[in-house]
Amino acid sequence: MSEPHVENNRQFPLKSEINLAASSGKFAWFDQGFTWLVYGLAIAMVALLFWISFIIFENALPAIRQFGLSFLWSQEWNVADLKFGALPFIFGTLVSSALAMLIAVPVGLAVALITSEDILPASVRSPIAFMVELIAAIPSVIIGLWGIFVLIPFLQPIQQWLYDHFAWIPLFSTPPAGYGMSSAGVILAIMILPTMAAISREVLLAVPKELRSGSMSLGATRWETIFGVLLP
Image 1 (cartoon, rainbow, N blue to C red):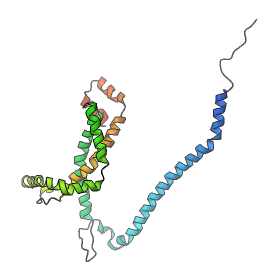
Image 2 (cartoon, rainbow, N blue to C red; image 1 turned 90 degrees about the vertical axis):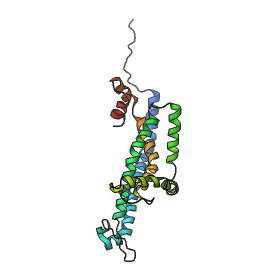
Image 3 (cartoon, rainbow, N blue to C red; image 1 turned 180 degrees about the vertical axis):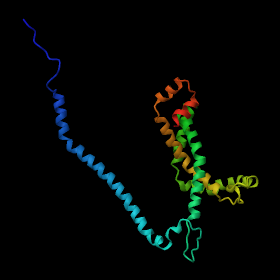
């Protein structure tokens, strides 16, 4: 008596697969609607950005017609004659931002490395990371007021020393009055340092551990791994 033939390849779907297909078809309209909703919100955000830009341009159009592009490189600022030049403000913004980045980038990366790598014990890394994120939540207005009333008086003797010994450098060539470009750069660096350190730390924590172990298994030291693998 021959045994019944059993097919190894299943030809008929299971009951669970039938129910899953039915439910997928039932809620397909919901998935499609959610997709179109996300697209609509993305388009709305772009349209809002263009709308804000148009309003700003429309309000600035009379000044553009009167002063033209010379407003960007003119240094004259005379309210009585209605003559305004933005070059000193543009120059101050660029120089203070460059000084802030020059200070904040290495310090921020150092804080991110200390709080993300096994350089310090975990009992020390966690409080430092918590304090950095807490400082990032302080409003910039508060930091600015603190810089005016606390930091600038503290920096004034240092600025005087730099002026006495390095007056041949353009950055320190004017007598310090407290409110200078160096003070602005330091205050801006303090403003952006917590955010830069927190974001850099999250990025370093997202690097796969296989890259660290792979680099060290090839003979690289910890610092060679940091500068050759993690930071790039």
